[in-house]
Image (cartoon, rainbow, N blue to C red; front, side, top):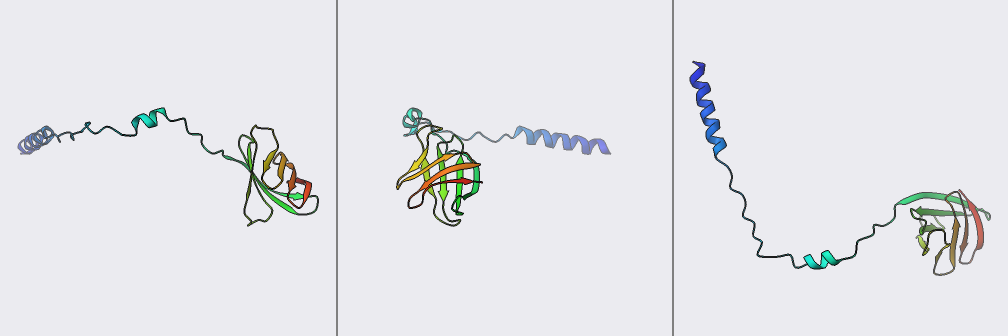
Amino acid sequence: MKSPLLLTTAVALLALSACSKPQPEVVTSNPDPMATTLANAAPVELPPAIKADKTMRCKDNSLAYVTFFQGDKQALVRTEKAGSPTRLTAANAGDPLTAEGGWKLTGTPTSITLTAPGKGTQTCKA
């Protein structure tokens, strides 16, 4: 009794496996118009990752909020916690980070020397 049912099931599975879906038609007559432009494009450099985000106390008892980035060529400085950041950059790692308006930053995530417009030069520690 089980043999005819087993045989019928096997035949049905064989018939279903023989039904293959046709492959989708790929049309290559429309080449990518940007292919050569993309092939000749310069490699894209990703933005640097955040190295450290520190709140630093300065000599005049003010706070500086500094975000340091990998590569030591960029930092963001805020003088107020919710204030707008100022981006300081350097051409080479190890050079002082500068921005328009007289901003200058040197140091590490534990201790910096910050020159801000209207405040002069101060040393700050994390």
